[in-house]
Amino acid sequence: MLQCFEDSPDFAKQDRAPFKFKHRLMGHPALSLENLGRVIPALPKEQVYYSSGLLSKSDDFDRAHIEHGNGLTIEQTIENIRTSDSYIMVRSPEVDASFKPLFNELVGDVGALIRRQGGGDRVVNPQLYLFIASPNSLTPFHIDRYSTYLMQFRGAKEVKVFPGGDERVVTAVECENFMARAGQRPTWKPDSENLGTSFHFAPGEALHIPFVAGHYVKNGADDVSISMSIIFNTRDTAHRIRALLFNQRVRPTMTSLGLSPSPVGSHAFVDALKSQTYRAASWLARSMGQGE
Image (cartoon, rainbow, N blue to C red; front, top):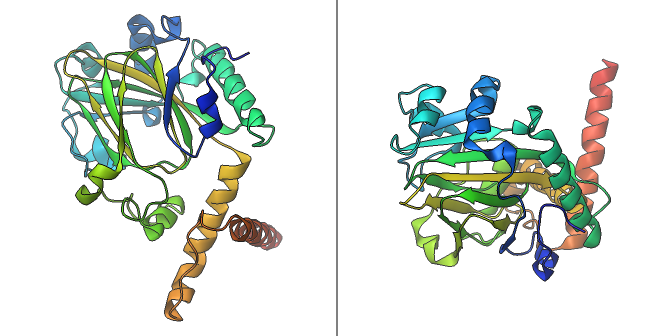
């Protein structure tokens, strides 16, 4: 039995399509404003990012805290979050003792869902992210290197999710470079707006965002938004990551020959070969490096 999520047949769609479901974590003490006000300022600075919430879909999600500062300290940002037009993102709040039991329970649920779908026997690199945002804040369009379950605790928001692998939204080259951390995140393409699916998101609800599916978030006007996600990879998405890295590595050579690698996701057998080849090459490179 799942501890944090209400069970749903939609879980069979994991990493194939976005879907909403219910979570069971409303009122959890770790997510009270009192606890958040204690935990967030005490975390290492490299785990807490905050900026103006008045962003556009095309802003660089990774550099918002650098390019769009709100001129406040984190303590001032939390205290004035309702009126300061701010956005706070916290990486790995589970390092605090108050979040550890919640983290372990969520990992247990995700692991059960992965096993149910035949996706392996473990959750790869799970991590929590916490989001607190002023009314009307916007999280720019972006993709992620993992699968996501996003849970809402306070306020409302609209999440628009786009189909992964659609070159009209994110090109193969953009996705490969992003996975290899080579260059900027994929850019927002206004012409793709109608390709996304909008989900209205209220407290007690959760949303699955598939691996590398583009999305952006618009918070409601009536209240502060508090949400939290558990991110993770599976055996299958780890294979897809290595296949994307393989494509990124060989694309320049193939382009010089007038060729291009097949997009990841178009041929499962070819993707598996790419993944195995990249893993073997990486192991060999590490072994040679260690021997020098």
